[in-house]
Image 1 (spheres, helix red, strand yellow):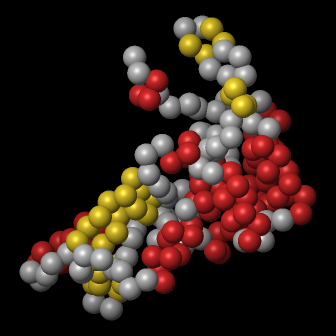
Image 2 (image 1 turned 90 degrees about the horizontal axis):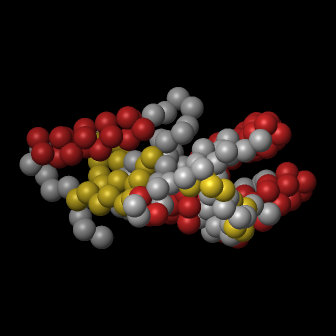
Length: 185
């Protein structure tokens, strides 16, 4: 058994779950309009299947037209576990999440610790200094905000493929990015 083959799942008390739900309801209206249109995962009225469909249709179109297409897939391994808290909270602040809500979110993550249950034994507490809580209410929204700057930079670049007059750059779901381009860049 190798520890890297396992992923932690967050089990929180009812108070934490309710608090995260309330925080999500408060910050989502601020963050959602700023979310990159390339991000399809964990987004209302979007689906990870849309991401796969866009990539498949683009490659099929280029094959049919006998045009060269480059596809680079980026999978940030254990991305949710490695997220840098300072970068995340800086991004949130610059997106307008500030004041008491920002301080509360930061304190939730600054004071985060874990315990591991293995063979019915509970470990001591270990302080966590990076990552988001797997399975918690806010985790996907926070991660999407964390990598939003990368996607916004791709949107501003000239990287991408085209289907007619539609620019197809980098369909993403949430930490898997498929960069499509007509030339290697």
